[in-house]
Amino acid sequence: MPDILLFEEVIKHSHKPEFINTELTLTLPFEKRQKSRFRAQLNTGEEVGVMIERGSVLRNDDCLKSKDGTTVKIISADEEVSTVHCDTAFDLARAAYHLGNRHVPLQVGSTWLRYLHDHVLDEMVKGFGLTVNYKSAPFEPEIGAYHKGHGHSHAHGHHH
Image (tube, rainbow, N blue to C red; front, side, top):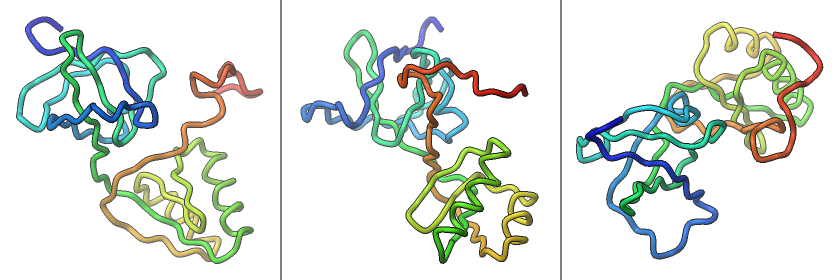
C-alpha cells in the first residue's frame, strides 16, 4: 500500500501507555475490525492502510501505530444490532446456545445478548418467548476460545 500512511502495530487498550493521547481516530464496523489488511479513512479524511498480524481483532479504544510513530485510536462504529433481553439465566443460556450453534458472533451482557441484526435469528429467538430490541450501537462480540493468542488451534471437532 504505497503512498499512504501504513499502520502495522496494534496497541491493545489494556496495554496502552498513558502518554498515548491521539486526536486521530479510525471508526470501523466489526467486519473491518476483524480483518488484518485493509484501507480506511481517518476522521481527518486521510486514506490509510492497515496491515497487522493475521488473527488480530481490533477493539474499541485500541490504538494502531505506524513506523513513523503516528498513532490512531480505534472507535467501534455504530451498527444495526439486535439485543435479546433475558429474565432468567436459563433463557440467557438457551438463547446463547442456539445462536452459538449457528456460529453467530455474540456480545454477552449479564442479562442480554447482542448480534448483528438478522431477521431470521430474531424470529428464532422470539420463538423462545424472548424480547428482541433493535438499535444502532457499537458491536463488541466475544472473540472465542479458539482466537489467536489463546494457544489453541481452530479445530473443534466438526467440519464446515
